[in-house]
Amino acid sequence: MTRFIVAMALCAFALAPCAAQSFTSSPASPISNALPPTTDVITVSGGPISISTMKVVLDITHTWDSDLDIFLLPPPGLGLLPIALSLGNGGNGDDFINTEFTGTGDGCLVASGPITGGTAPFTGLFNPEGDLDWNLLYGLDGNGDWTLEITDDTGGDDGTLNSWTIDFGPFVSQFSGSSAPALAIPDSDPLGTTDT
Image (tube, rainbow, N blue to C red; front, side, top):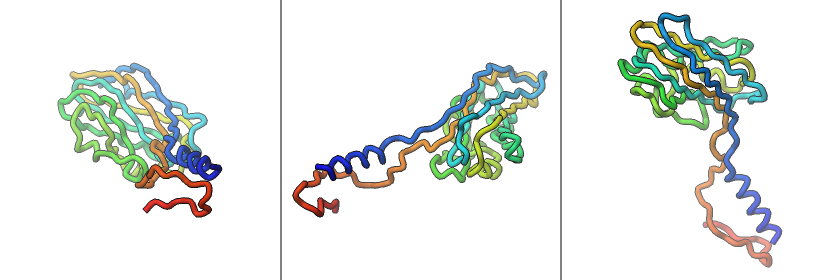
């Protein structure tokens, strides 16, 4: 009976979803070429000391997406350059709704492709234009001030940075097995049972 309880406890642990840490800002800041670039800061405290998987999620309303150049600025202490998320993509399409970014080097998340191949409102998971710069984040400390910077480089259309989120993972279970048989482990058999 003891082996059965231990086996069940190990399975429950292996199948449990791994916790993610989310840090969100909802500034409702205006985006306009008549204004300086729109910036907003998320201060991450208690985040990962070594980034293993990460995504940034945007909610932006704007009536001409190709007007926008969007950058993520890592904490200054990391010594990294700004990461281009999207530079003039989307043509005359509107909005970035639940637009998620992650790097090609992420071992957990797999994007549908680069943002340059997407269409407005860019709902889903994409690789940023600055993918090589993004991939430098893995293994670094995630704590500090992260800045989102949005420049509207053409007049006539304005918008709003509604919210943005930084999520640190892992986001999925660490269980990688392909078989989950319903087997009882008999108490009288010292070898137990096997899955064939």
